[in-house]
Structures are given as structure tokens and as C-alpha cells.
Length: 254
Image (tube, rainbow, N blue to C red):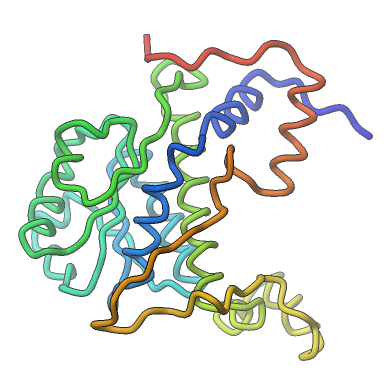
């Protein structure tokens, strides 16, 4: 077996994912219940690098059965708030939780009863005051100065966990994915598959998509079980832990 690449940046970002613990389990389940229960779209928003992550999360959600789009917070204040409708839900990303550019979107949505999920290190004030659920990231150092690096990896992983969990709950299969993704190499691979090929995405039929006005039921997910769990990631991190030096220190930004 090849030894893992002993690159300090990769190590630090991998260790940041390992810092996601069971403390996220309950708020994660609440966030999933919100997103799985809406009749509209998931609106991702953020500014700067968090905004770029939001665009990627929205694209992943849309291609895996959860219609979503990115709303730029500055454009929102210049008329694009009209795209935020009752029945939608907000997924806001801000490492500090104090990005003033998001205030307009958050206040507008909060006043109209549109549920808000915030991904942030800050669950105490500012944007958190508008949120129904805060998915709290651990306080961490970036890989280089204050440039968003480690924090954006964690944001993206949480977004992927949300998107994949929702796909499973809705029974969204590999066949469905290729129907909405006919282009490129992924589309070519989908066309080659036999229709009897088993779905690559495991479905959880015990949790059907909830319809309008139905009572929400308690929800349990295994997306966060001790640590963030994805098979390939676990294998990589196990190698990193065995082959590399001491873990980096989780601490405040200098």
C-alpha cells in the first residue's frame, strides 16, 4: 500500500474533518428535517470563499434530487430577494457568523418564516440570531494565514453530507442522477450501464419525502457517527494518522 502524501496542508485539512464530532448529530438531523420537509428550493448563500462553496453545494444538491440555487447576498439586496419564496429554506455559510452582507437575506427570510440553517463557527450572535439551526464548525486555523482553506473544506464536506443524506431519503438513485446529468464523462458512463444495474446510491425507503402539511417525524442519520464518515475519507485519514506526525492543534485564529 502506498504511503499517504505527507503534505502539511493536506494533513491539516484532513484533521479538520476529523474534528467534526457527534456534537453535530442533533443539529444535523434538524437541518435534514427542515430541508426534507420543504415544498420549495434550498437557497444557498454566502460571501467571498464561503459563497463559492455555496455555489458548489447548490449544484450538488440540484443534481442529486434537491432543487437548489445560489443567491448572492449583495444582489439579493438589489432585487433578487424576490426569488426567496415561502416554501423555500436557506442554507447560509459564514465561518465567522458575522458577515454583514448576509444580514439582508437573513432578516428577510426570518420575518417571513422561511427556515434558516447556518454553517458557522459562531452559534452565539449576529447571523446565528436569525437561524433555526446552526451547524457549528470547530474553531480551526487556516492552512495559510487567514486565507479560507481549511474552513472551506469543512463547509463543503458538511454540504456534501446534507446533499447525499437528502438524496438517500428521497430515494434518488444512480439512474435518476444520470437522467439529469446526461453530459460529459458521467453521462457517457450512465448511458453504458444496463438498466438492471443496481443503483449506486443506497435508498432509505423508511424515510419517504414528506409532503405539504404532513407532521414531521423524528429523524436519525448516520452521517455524523463519532466523526465525519465517508469510506474513502476514513481510509485516507487512518493512513494519515498512522504514517504522519502529531495532529495539528485546533485553536483560534492568530
